[in-house]
Structure formats: structure tokens, C-alpha cells
Length: 157
Length: 157
Length: 157
Image 1 (cartoon, chains in turn red, green, purple):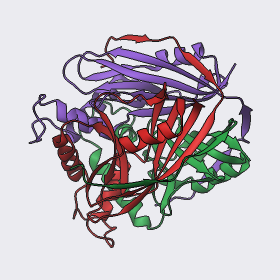
Image 2 (cartoon, each protein chain N blue to C red; image 1 turned 30 degrees about the horizontal axis):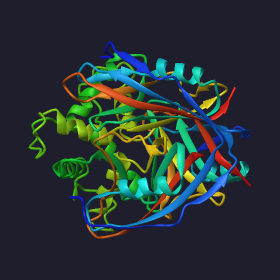
Image 3 (cartoon, chains in turn green, brown, blue; image 1 turned 45 degrees about the vertical axis):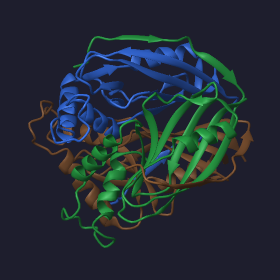
């Protein structure tokens, strides 16, 4: 199952002097779905004058989460939401049901996706692939205001 | 599916001079279940005199993992464990079964949750939300001693 | 569900002066399966002369992902792939199907595993456990060239 492979790698490039730049985000969601945060985090990286280092994105909630996924065809997001709904169905006999049928599935979906993401920054830009976008996933049926922290650790231009 | 949004963000705050503080944790588990690590990591952050930066928490195992989840109602943890048990059932015809029926499901549950977590630190405290706790999840039926590494990268007070 | 626990921890050790070392990896995959990246990342850590800090590994794709899993018995990888196939089956009525039946399941599997991993480095070596290996998981049926970024933030020997 571990297949034969060809791995190549560029020589390591090194930089000294480290800065920490932090910013808090507030995102208004509109019920279940994906909110694209990519442009806002790119703006943060520019404002921080980030050179080389890493961006950490952290969401301060347990029924909304983060993922990096395809940015091109919106039908991918439809199917991702369907898949999460099958993996964590409503009305499946959860014992924690006082906050509504969408609450416990929201916790499970958060556990199966990400609360924090790290994206390296090289030459002043995140190294996201061509088809990658950073999404907040709202798992609750109703609109929520969600708080996040973006933090860059690295060199400044 | 990508909904209209309102994103606001505070101006970036910047700090220089970076320290690295590392500590190893040993956690005694008592079979399947959640162990709350939050108070211990908060203690680490205080002892490290952390100012601004990021805490990385890493677990050195493949059948125990990490998650950030609700700290209030214990029934959430019951349901999370039920959900993991449905996603990775025992006796489902796994080929790797020499270490007991709970072993392969433990590997799958580890893959679906987290081996490492990153939590930004601002003004000397982790930015955990009101309802967030840091948990180790033991996936094996029997008690285990689990080893973790906590590391802070950032400024010191 | 939150069980009684015994947590012990070593005193924090501290180091100053931070470097950032970055390298890009290219990995040739051969269809669905696991590619062990551990030796290559260990080589990167040695070349970087890493002392104490953290390695971030990031994959720039949405249908291939990362995980840290058992390195001993190959049957674990067989079962992990079976499990992912059950959680994200092909031909399950996905709306996004223009790129083949393995494409949408690949996105779901990526969402359920990791796009970025962080591994602390202590005394010049990653703190991986005895049974842990770092894997790239190819979710597509056909061979792909996958791009990753490895980055060390920390002290240099």
C-alpha cells in the first residue's frame, strides 16, 4: 500500500528575524454553508507586510469550523455539505438535543474538519494551490457571528 | 453555496523577538473517553511567560488524538464518542485485527480528528472561545500512558 | 465522560533567536494510496540544521491530503483506505461528477483528513512517536504530481 515514489525537493532557503502579527476577524454567517475567507486573509498578509513565515487561522467556536477546499466549482461545496450531513445526521438519537437538531451534528462536523489551519507564506504570499480556498463552514441552521484569530509568525518585508 | 458575507477585522498588531518554549506532557488515560487538557496547557502558557504567539500541541500516538470541543455539557462528549464509533465501527472486517477489535477503529478515529493543534496566544492567554476546551481522546479500550509535546513560539513577557 | 486523569509535565525549556527555513517538495503518486514522506522531512530538518522549533507541512491540493499514522503494519494503511472509501463512496449521487467518480470522494476525504500538519522539533529531531509516520494520501485513481511546502520555524544549530 506504501507505493514506490519519486520525491524531489528544493534546497532549503533560510531567513532570520521573526515578527508576530495578529488580527481578529468577525464573520457574519447566514445559516449552513461555506464562507470564503481567502481574500480577507490575503489582505491580512499584505497589511502585515509578511515576507516568509506561516499564517495560523483559528476559529473560536465548536459548531463552525475551517477547511481548505476547491474554489472553482460551487457544486463541490454542495456535495461537501451533503457528505457532512450524512456523516453527522440530525435526529439520530443524540443525547445532547436541547439546542436544536442541528446543534450536535454541528459539533461532530467541527470535530471532523478543522479548528485551526496553517498556511506557509513565501515571498509575501500564502502558498495556496491554484484550486485552494480557505473556507469557514457554518454548521448551524441559523445565522451566527463567528470570531476568528489570524496570526502571522515570520519575517517582515 | 458561498453565501454573501460581512467580514470585519481589527488592524494587525505587531511584536518582535521570538522565543521557543517546549514541554513534554504525560497523560494517563482510563480507556475510551475524553481527557480535558485545557487547565494544564493554560498552566504551561503561564509558566512560559508567553506574551503573543502560538501554542502547538502534538500527540505522539496513532490510536489517541486531539480535538477542541465544547466544555459545558458532558452529553456532547458522549455523543461525539458515539459518532466516532459509528464512523469507525469495531468488527467491520478490518484486516488489521491482531491488536484487538478496538485497535483499527482507533487508528481511523485518529485520522479523522487531530494529531496536532495550534492555538494563538494574545496578551498572555490562548484565544480559546468561551465554550472551547482542549481534549485528548483515548480510542483504546484499555488504559494507556500517552505522551504529548506542548510548544510555544512567540514573545515572552 | 471526562475521566479522572493524571497529567505530568516537564519544566518548560526556552530558546531564543528564530529562523525560518522553507523548501518545496514534489511527490509523484501512483493512484490511490499512501506515500511515506517521513525520511524526506527528516532530511529537510537535518539540512535546515534545525535545533528547536516546529515543522509545518502543507499540501497544495484538494484531492490529496496528509496524515500521521502507523508505520509498522501495512494492513493498517489498507484498512484506512477502506474506511475512507466507506465514508466517501463513489457513485453516491454527487452533483460534482464531471471529473470522474473518484474526484468528489477525493475532496471529501481531503476535508476529513489534513491539509497542514505541524510537528515540534526538539534537539534537532521531530518528536514523532515510535509508530508514527507522515503520509501523503493520494485520493485520485490516476497518478498525480503533488506539490507540498515544508517550513521550519525555530532555532538553528
